[in-house]
Image (tube, rainbow, N blue to C red):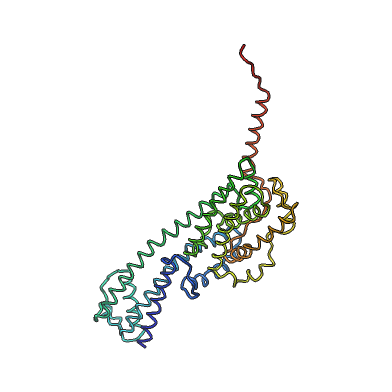
Length: 393
């Protein structure tokens, strides 16, 4: 029995050490399937989604989803701590519980002895040093010193882990928030192109796509190293990192399809990096095994009626799509390169994908500001046309 307890304790401690190393320190995606973090996320996310389904409104449902990311992080740290405490308690139990308990709870039963061992392990890991339970063997003293060192290292990892997560989250959300003024809220490709339909807009669009190429690379690096960031929601219900990424992919797909303007080359570069991010993040969650992946062929983000609306919107920007069958075929081919992964991720994370073209809003601030600017320019032109210049005699 003591050998079994020692092996079980060793398994608990090594599992936590390996999982913490892979989750916090290792800067790449682990390849195994039995990591504590992965099992924990699978075991908790599905019940959380089931609970959110019973919410009375979408706003409350989104609020429930937004709580999961930070809460799961705290629960994961608590799970690691409990496994470490239990592992060292099993070590002490395998030594025959070599402690003198001042409360005289050591009654001889296995359960009572393990309770004392668990208490000693908890106070040692968190370095309380109460001294009410005293070890009376050299081996137990050595393990207590070792466990207190593990506890200090655990606290140091937590202190260093949390700021890294929230810095990565803040950097991600700055770009997502900036896209609101460039592509609407929720963002969509047609609106992004429409708002760049001005003199010099192609150059500005190329700069924007270059910034999002780097943003996609940062997402690829941070969200694979720290998959729990994928569950963190944006500040507003109409925004998400996934919808922003897919809207950029949609924009690049359109620019590559019509092959017009100087921004098409940058669109190719941004598309490759953004698609890489979508696919690799999907592999972290094994989306190919989910039901949404099996039914991906039944989902169409761009049905025929929306395609005609998209053609009308692009026609205002002088981008020929419907009049060029080859361009429409290229668009369909490009969409198949990323939409199945994006759809599976959307279903798993419960983050809706953006539409290709959004209906006009009654209180659209962009349209209001554009109208005011147009009226001001028209007034200036009329004033200049009616002005009379009298030369000096």
